[in-house]
Image 1 (cartoon, rainbow, N blue to C red):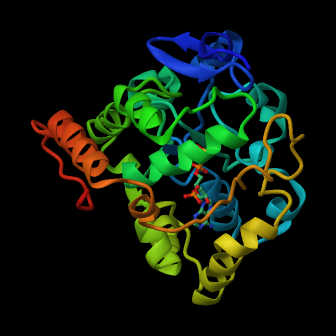
Image 2 (image 1 turned 90 degrees about the vertical axis):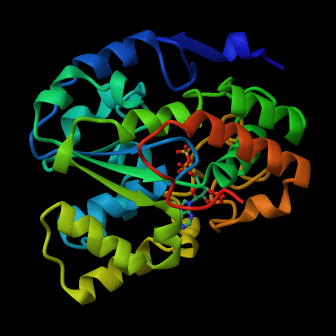
Length: 289
Ligand code: PPS
């Protein structure tokens, strides 16, 4: 089994999985030229990234299913910081959609000066942590997570890919993007996907009919995505992502942390997160209890 040192690249204080990132890919991201009509979903890991890879093309193209049925999600809406971007970038047609796990301060200069839009997706960190715990079991390119308790310590200390959840959230909450950024939560999307789709399409200046919204919601449901081989990672060799160990599209619910946290773990987790956010001007959209 490989050690974290072998599996991660340390770049500007953050850990990046070497399988999918390199110094070249991070340089490519830094030098990437954003266009004014680009949109990027900025998401801490395990908080709704691949969901946005399904939603964005459909909202942008008015519900044409071709991209989600013919292009694997990682090429359809690539990660800004991953190696694949350089390979597929010339095939992307405007308006282009991307995703990123980067914090705001690592976004490329051209993003800041362009008019490109950002959609910041947040998920309750307890559920993101549980999802990540299972992801570390199925992803051959990530270190063994250890026990749930050990993984919680790594997560709270930021010794995981893309660092601390609180740092990521703070960076985006303090962005200077004004009306170029929209916040949405994973929980809102689970609770009422059509309403979330209306919010996203309004933000992107798309006037979609109710019929189209309903069609997109159906094709972006957890169940439909789990059956879509272009989106469920079944095309990836098992040595990288083993859906038999834990499916990538695992549960897709809110509050699974309640099935995993002891009362001590819950108290510790909540107190660490609250302490790190205590002087912040923003409030979290959900209670952590
Ligand atoms: S990654 O690896 O960081 O890109 O992962 P990410 O896509 O951000 O997060 C994976 C979790 O999102 C869930 N997911 C969904 N939930 C509800 N509905 C839909 N359509 C959906 N698509 C993805 C996925 O199941 C992971 O959460 P868990 O809790 O593990 O099920």
